[in-house]
Length: 413
Image 1 (cartoon, helix red, strand yellow):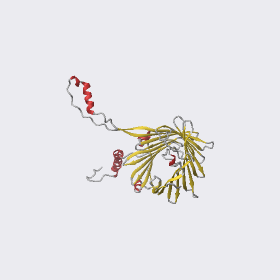
Image 2 (cartoon, one colour; image 1 turned 90 degrees about the vertical axis):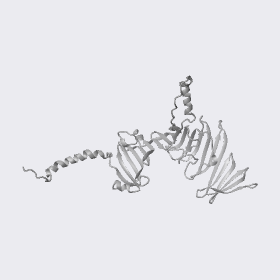
Image 3 (cartoon, one colour; image 1 turned 30 degrees about the horizontal axis):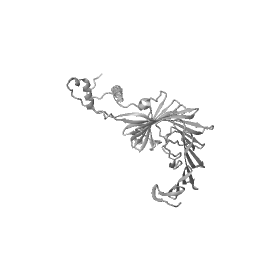
Image 4 (cartoon, one colour; image 1 turned 135 degrees about the vertical axis):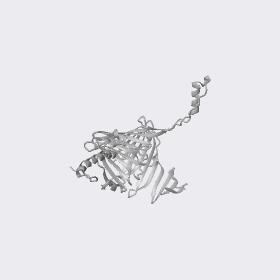
């Protein structure tokens, strides 16, 4: 066999051995430097601001060119936020969704599904400046009923647990925690502490004073504390329609609470309206400043509140509100307060009148049967009249929420 001349190209047989070796070299060196793949390829969609997947995108680059897009994938449990790993089970599959706005993550959602494909947990987090913060967590049982709901805010978080009997909601417990800032005790001076320490350690015995070390300032600390806790019990008719909700306030909850019907989720509202919007059913004329620890509601088959009873910590009835309905409109609201013997202390009544289009045009307020105030609507104006001894004493005209005229009426009705 002749020797190969100097400078001759390698033969094809030589490439047959060198090419596989080069491939293995690239796999061993380069592949470990690339990020690990997720459990499933991310699917991209063009989306809207609400995170609704409108239609598929050809690729990630195409999706991110739009104002809103959505990336969906199945991820391993190790990619979950630490707050969610405690809810994970080996039989769950984690569905991850991320909403992008102008190419940057805006909101993330994780859905835990069991082996039947049913949702067992849903969590949502908002993303700001690259940092993700949980907004809410909802847990469901094997029948799909909501059993736990948690909401997170910067300085407050709530947790509600729901209990069922034969697929019927019977009780819920709500706890509210507030973040407090604990300031260090500024009244204690560091120098006085050192002086006391020297006196105790031997300065009184004639020892020399040691140089005082600088005291580092103490930073305030954050601490979560439970501020409210109440229980709602639900009562139903024979036809399984909700008829009554009994609220027991254990600690810290606001005194004046109102439940909106037929909304099933218990949520305190800090006003006196049973139905929204623009339905001034309980007039501000029925102000109440009593200390309430338990509130019970009775509604009709249409979900309208009929009676609202309020009790003190001993279980004694202290006040009661009754709503009288005429068709779909509230005709009157009566509020009564009671003493410890059950006798009526004060009675306030508000009556409403409506036009042919069911717009409210009149409100009359009585205290212990005596007319004290009338508000009527005429065009774009509201005319408010205050009565004294059965006669008009003051008349005020309001327009678009502004008082434009006030008239004191003397000697005339």
